[in-house]
Image 1: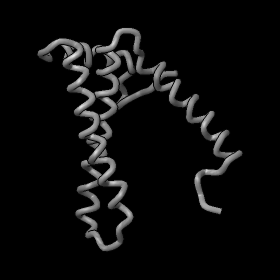
Image 2: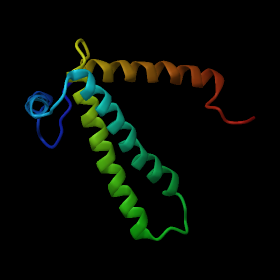
Image 3: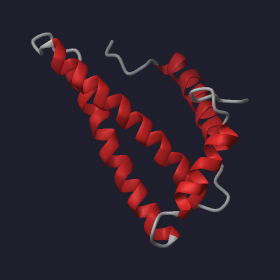
Image 4: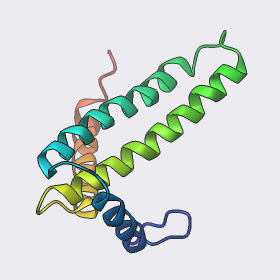
Length: 120
């Protein structure tokens, strides 16, 4: 499966990430810790948007600002996930993404049987 991002293939994106990774200071374990910290930070913008987006009393320009920050946060989060996979030997982003998709399908089968957590 080939994922495209702005017309660039995954191979081209990965080459760019490798080049940028070489410019980063520190050892791989320290970079990995920093990456996971960045990932947590970026997730915050996404959480803020999703929790506040449904509030009717928020002005539209505030909602748009939150949406823009969340989109950038998602982009940064995905990029850090890819970079973390480059840092850890044996981790392949595409294989991990497929693993996540397979796991989600399994969970959906469970949800079909047990419900999606709604109260009865």
